[in-house]
Length: 334
Image (cartoon, rainbow, N blue to C red):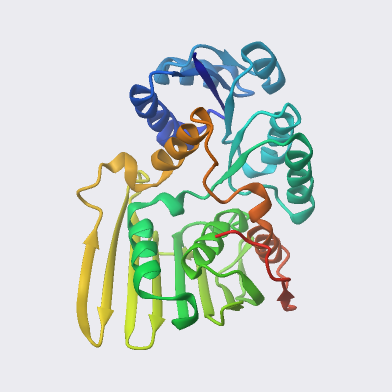
């Protein structure tokens, strides 16, 4: 029986990452059909269909869903329209993988989560760093060697070039989710400080937070620096884990992980031998989603319901909120 899969959003990111990933995944899953792609600009949808072998192209989401009746949908549209597009899919009860952010604010997140609960629709949020080989390798080491209550501090620097003239909070949410993914503990409280604004964006966004397990978290976001990279250091008594991820102008990423104990290098990992398509995490993320849905398995986390903290923190960045945020326990599945 054919499993039908559709994509909403045929923009530049989808052409660079989602399209090649879908084409490769379907070559390994013969029961899955790329049944349709949709974009409000018909030329984009038509070009995407031809480039990545979709069965049809559409300019209206509801029309595509009613005609194709897909078994699963990926929504990969700009953040301002993610809520509206996702709501149409969820109201029909179709399993949904939606790109970050899962709503521009907590009100939108709450509504989407409510619809998913009411319709019993499985969801997965596209935080692709959870699938980057370097980050999954780091998580494996942390799970084996760093109990959450033994970690003393996590330091994270998200560095970007020429991103001062936009709402950077919808990109910063990647760092917020990655912190939760590596800490393996939700936040108890968080506080932001902001540097002076240049164009429309603070040149520096800093978060200091404490997890429920007692880890101090320090995050620096620099949207207007000289390169694109992310550096993460996890410290426990007598050992440290260092993660570095860099990106080239064409979006290709490269990551490495070093594990130190008592001033000695325990292990060193590089993803350079991993196929370039896999390094961004997008391919592995979509593959996990389609494999789980087509095989009637439980979807990987995070689901919509697991993303309250990520969205609340993103919203605080957008609003330049400097008052402390406090969270009830049990609001994140990691």
